[in-house]
Length: 339
Image (cartoon, rainbow, N blue to C red; front, side):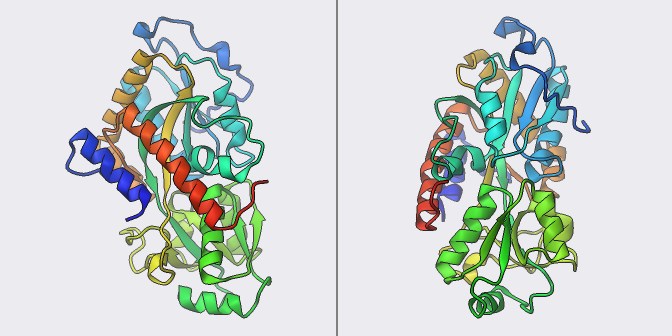
């Protein structure tokens, strides 16, 4: 069991649960973080809440944020506006939220990209994932799947590895986020491959180029890539988690061919550092209520997302700290040097 699954089990134990269940873009890029209503935390929220997503519209995290935001708005009786701020491997969105006023009106729906991987991928990160943020609620996890262009004559991962080994430096893979990058580089290290990484600004763009044959491999999140992963426009060879997904029946875990491979992306909600405890508690309670809704769970399950209802801010904060260490180890083992 990898550290992610172990931490998920810890969430369930700490919360006394039997198991961890698995608006059109209304972003206002020019709105200053301090433009939210000023109000005592006891009256929170007294106005619209902006949920910043550091990835493009159509990405897996964006889909989760919109589902969560819609239901959260109903519970809080205030609009929850999705503000997509993609770029620099989630750094732009993270920097924006880190500088926002800690009043609960600017929140951050992010992943292991900004809070686990970036500190080991970038030598001069302009935010601290621990000191500059307040953990609010863990949301869930999103598996990834390895897909290749049909022009590659490989029907399974073993054949693809053999094909790539015979053509060192001739194949390329798309990397729109840190999870795709670390997964691809980990595969390269364990399997002994020489495949060239091509950076992308967004997951949908990366999938488009895989379908078009501009790259031959892409480790895609199920949230943005499900329709293509199920189609004959790409060939899906493996899933990054230790277990198969019911949404991709017949697609085996990569770890069955490449022992030691086990990787999952997580999602969570943060606020800026210094968020008042009453605001954190209110948001955590309402977010967990949304995640416990069977309708929400079913909708997110359609994109492969497994929710974590019930995680307290304290348990989530410990999980984030553990994941920061875990991803740092993965990145070092993969031989990835900070930029």
